[in-house]
Length: 91
Image (cartoon, rainbow, N blue to C red; front, side, top):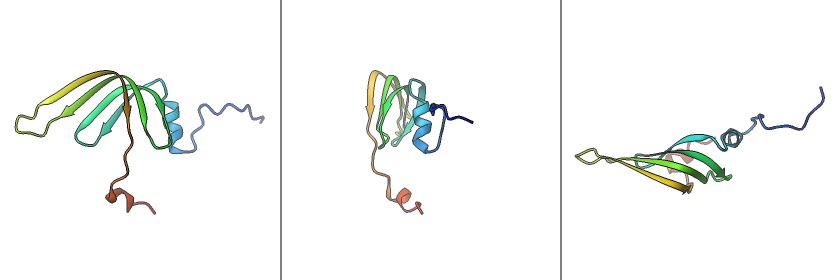
């Protein structure tokens, strides 16, 4: 069969899944009991993200267990170094 050169739906690496989610609403769970829901505009190989129309939810672990909700038009989410407990689990 002839190759059409169209690899838009082809997934061979984990970041290919992220590529398929461009311009889609995604849910991102962060450290510190924080969650983001927004439209994925961009990403890079370090998993830095640019989200639009973002709803941020912060779950406070205090005695009052307050939940904080914020909205942002655009948000840059910086990737961080893996924690030591995750580094040791590779190979």
